[in-house]
Length: 355
Image 1 (tube, rainbow, N blue to C red):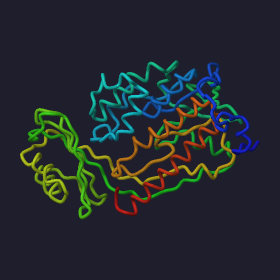
Image 2: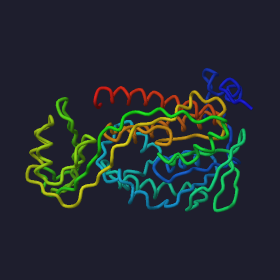
Image 3: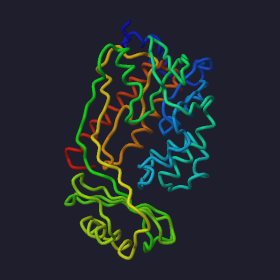
């Protein structure tokens, strides 16, 4: 059966009646079961939103409580936009009690695991063996047992764990847009940073440099420096090489803060990878019960620094759809549209050489 937008719109009346109070007439989903693939930020935040909207939530991940320790991007400095942080604290009002107001990525991911795990009904520390889709349900093989679900959220990141099953169900390969690989992110732990008695983050770049930098100070002279380096450039291994890079940027203050610093550990490199997007707006027969989120749907270059913000935009669309009582295909269509806009912004930034 073909499930186009016109078919499903009649099942989603809440989005088309002006003045309607969506909260007061939201349909109950208390008997519906959802499964989430992946225990990263996408999966855990999705679990929180689904549980608060009355769904039973299962989650599958082979190492659910260890990702914040092993994910390479957790070691890199992140600067949280106001909109991203407002969304996170709206979904988790107690978040700042666990992270403070300027958390590093590892602290944030650890807090998301501690707080998000409370919203999971059944946690399966394994990989899914297979998945099959009918028009409205997903069957997932977990440890040799098939379980039926009303909703499957693929938050498995670049692995795109269910893409093959979705392609079979749709009867066509899923189109994949691809961009350029871009640069690496290299993070160096530092000691002896000057003017760093208070935590804070500082970013710098230059139109005339191939590099960018984000410095996070943790107080008492310690902190981390993440450099955005060209893909063909080896990562700096000495503080002298780091200072040479900082001199090419538009922030002499950052160079001054680091000029007497010393390395206090090995560098962590997140290698360049090409941006990519599942172009699902061109696929007509997608199973109704499937929604991809985050990197599963859209990967942009790490040197553009947009991945987490893009994820929270996807989740914001999911939340609004849940509140509005929209059907799963309509929610997915809106998430896909959001990712398409993000893709256009990212490819334009790539063409300009960065944001």
